[in-house]
Image (cartoon, rainbow, N blue to C red; front, top):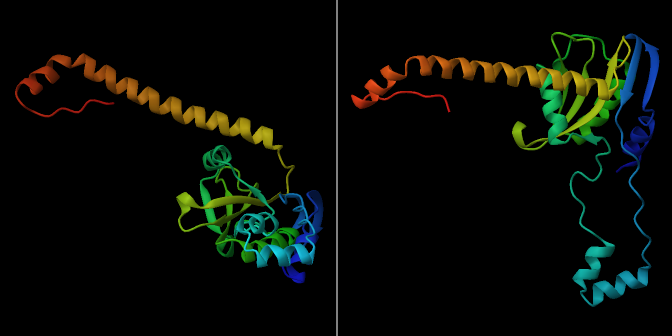
Length: 212
């Protein structure tokens, strides 16, 4: 990471606060993880001997290969968290196109930092509650396989605790599943009421559709 990147990362470590800028008074939360632990100091002579002896096993311990995501210090969403947010937000826009609400300076700083780290930076929000957007970083070749990271959220209103958001998401997901099951039950009951017709069609060599 360059000195400029380090300075930007350091500037982003205030986690939750209320600020006033050209976007008005905003509640803001950013999702940086803790600093990565420093690499252990390895004496130059030891490194030289490991290299000279071609000790690949030892080299992998003292100089491990770094993954491309090692410098990303934001919260990565788990599959469960992705499902939660997918149920809550029906709008996902590239940050460059987002125009629903003014982004405060702190969020702009996080977005600028994110542009250097991620394939795409998006704003996720709901049509029902557009005043509670989230800034999300994505990295990977396709949406379904992309890793997704929470970068920040902001609102002129009080930010809801994550546990409250989980409760809302759970209720939404439950409602969706219940609706689909009821539709399936109604369809099955309809077929049961016409089972003799279905038998006749099958006996006549016609194809029938039964819900699975």
